[in-house]
Image (cartoon, rainbow, N blue to C red; front, side):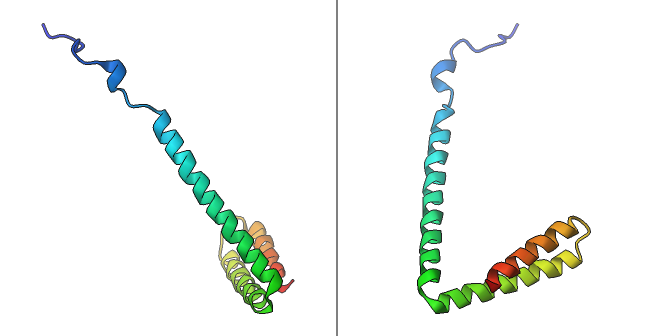
Length: 95
C-alpha cells in the first residue's frame, strides 16, 4: 500500500512566502506612481510657463477629443457617455 503523504518532505520551510511578491509589487508600483506624478507635475509646470507647450497640448487635446467623438458616433454602447467625454476633452483643449 502506498503512502498518501510523503513524511520526508518539509512542508513548513519549503512553502513559498506570499509576503515577498506583495512587498516587491508594492515597491515597484509605488516607484511607477512616483514617476508618473513627477512627469505630470513637470508637464503642468511647463504648460503654465511656456505658451508654445500650452498651444501644443491644447491642440493635442482637441485632436484626441475629436477622435473620441468620431468613435462615439460608431459605438453601439455608451454613446451618450462617450459624447460627453469627447466634448469635455475638446473643451479642455480649447480652454
